[in-house]
Length: 402
Image 1 (spheres, rainbow, N blue to C red):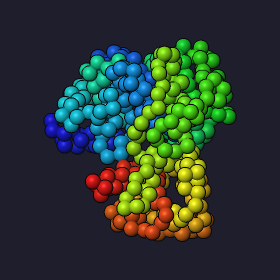
Image 2: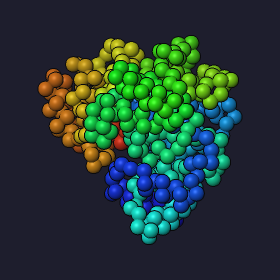
Image 3: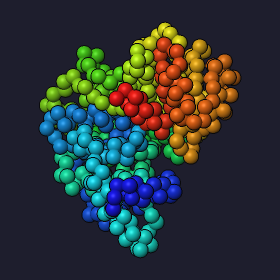
Image 4: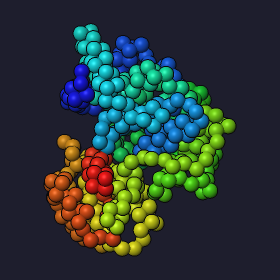
């Protein structure tokens, strides 16, 4: 199977959508001889910051000479980004070989009368198998959606992490904020320590679940704190919190780990580019909490000057909350359509912006919208919203800068 054939096969699985439940992934992993049990893991969920925490923790472990796998989602440009060992993406050849092997297992499942696994379940199984084949010592695993019924929730980790809990994916994770908290607390395992940055009512639920599982809970600003003396290269005020969470998780793995200053890379999260003297920020702020975090970082780093946005989100997000949390009255917003069947209509978003006295224009075509964006005369240019859009913009910027 070629790499192109592998991608085509996987994307055909996308038609199965999101289907909660662990029966399919458990069967698939059973056929693969349960590779997820052949190394130690850390399991990370949360509404925002979980990808950054995973990347930070992976880097800390790598620096300690631990061979570490990293599974995250979604990707910005290539599926290969989701599966890494010691910070290096899986190669096209290894990716294609894995898909070929997984396809054989899926066919066996189907012949035994099981449903086909979804795209994400298949990618999860691929990551688990790849890490076992490469004999990693640890794998840092990011939850795809929620926690309780997520296909990654078949591991018993050394440490569990819940970064925060905010109102996103409510329709799939319990219906409201407390339901979301219970779904995310679903990754808590008996006697496995848990680190969290959650607050308020969600924290109460996490405490209850931790206590019922006899799992020791470590809470930000109670049991550990942000160390302002540590410097990291990632921009964004929220990354200091993510780093504190990653450090606490690392210390639970080995209290002797040295935590130096780090030059982390986590694309698309308050990432700053300089293009012909223009400052361009890209950030995958795709929900209310992420939008608020972006606004705080923008106001601190770029408090004055007219801001031009390139923006697009999915229609199942709380668009009004995102708008309220990101934009100021004098911002100008170019609205385009993310590359997703779930994309919100640009013209509808413009109507919502107009109702809030924010000037905007709808441009359906991404390439045309991007050109208007980089040719604009704003003092700070910000691309924000869905990662399906951010990946495209980042790729275009890198292409131009090269």
